[in-house]
Length: 315
Figure 1 (tube, rainbow, N blue to C red):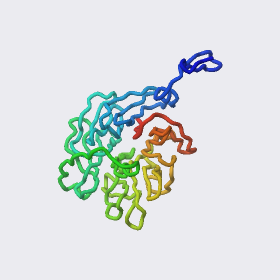
Figure 2: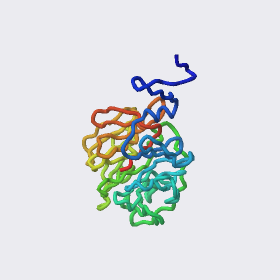
Figure 3: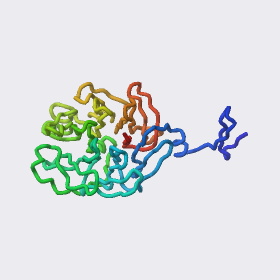
Figure 4: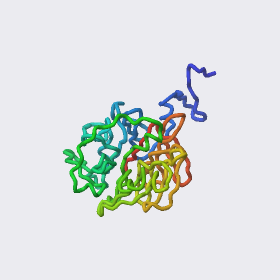
C-alpha cells in the first residue's frame, strides 16, 4: 500500500511512477500549453510562460499590465504606476515616461507605444512615445482638442488601486491599438460630455471618436467599460464591463460597435485574444483565486491556464 507520506501516484498502463505534486507545481503540471508566449501579472510581479515553463521577470514590487511589443522582443508594463519597458527576458528595465500612466499598447509597426494619462481637459487622454529609447516627449493622440495644446505636466502616480474588483477595474485606463494601425480604443474621450464612464474608439487619421459603450448619464445605468482588446484581424473588439447590479464580465462586439454579446463567465475580465485561433485568455476565478483561463469563443469551453491576471499574448 502506498502511504500518504510517500505521496506517489502510479500512472496506470505505463509502469512509470511519478511524484504527486501539490500547490503551484501541481497546477503548472496540469495546465495546458500554448504555441506562443504569454505575459501576465501575479502578486505584483510580471511572469512569462514559454511552453510548459514559467519565468518571473520582475520582483513583486508593484508591477502590472504587461504588453508584448509587435515583434515580441520587448514588454511594456507599469511599475509603481509609471510606464516602463524591458526586454522579453527581463533585461534592460527602464522608465519610458514620467508620471501616472495606464496600460500601454504597441503600434502594429512596432515604432510607437500608446498609453493613457491625464489630458488637457482633465479626463484620461491617449499619448504616444517612441518604442525605442530614447523615447522622446509624449505626443497627444486623443482627445483631438488637446493636440494643439502643450501636454500637461506629469501627474504623480496614484497608489495601488483599492476597493472591490469592479471598483478597481472601473478606473483602469489601459488602451488597445487596432491591428491595421488606424484606431485606438480607450476609456473616456468626447463621450464624457454625455456619460460618466465610457469607452471610445478613436481614428488616428481623422481624430474622430466613436462611443462603444457608455454608462451614467444620457438615461443609462451606472457602470463602466474598460481594458479593450482587438482580435487578430481587427473585426472584433472586447472590453471588461459591468452595469449597476451586474457582475463583472467581458463583452465582445463588431469593431463598428454592433452585435454586443457576453463571452466567458461572470467575473471574467481582461480578455486577450490568442491569435486567430478562436480562443482567448481571460482573467477569471479558479480554486478561489485569480487565474488565466483559456476560453473557446465559439463553444464557451474553459480550461485553467496559469494563476494570475492581466494576460498579454505574443502575436
